[in-house]
Length: 96
Image (cartoon, rainbow, N blue to C red; front, top):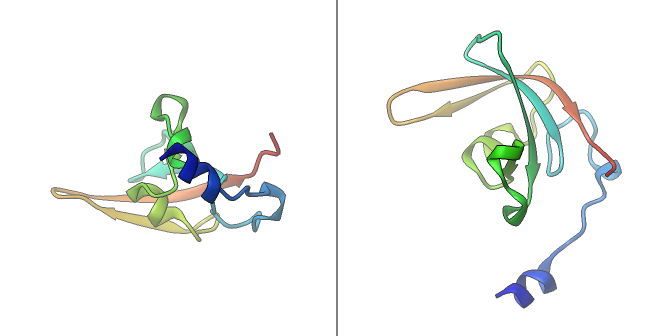
């Protein structure tokens, strides 16, 4: 299984990502439901995901609704008992 993952892995050059749009590798600052508290997450690969380090998988429900959004956009996540609104405040791509 690991060999298969390595064989199909594709490197992503973060400098080539659209810098004003959320894509794989982006670090995103958000507000949730008009809360004054800001949250920051990086969209990473499945094997890199670690919520304690604010790294979420690009296939997670939150990442899926954020992908393609720009600063000022709002994304909506419908949960079983509530709806959460995420306002995109900043997008950053780190070169490291």
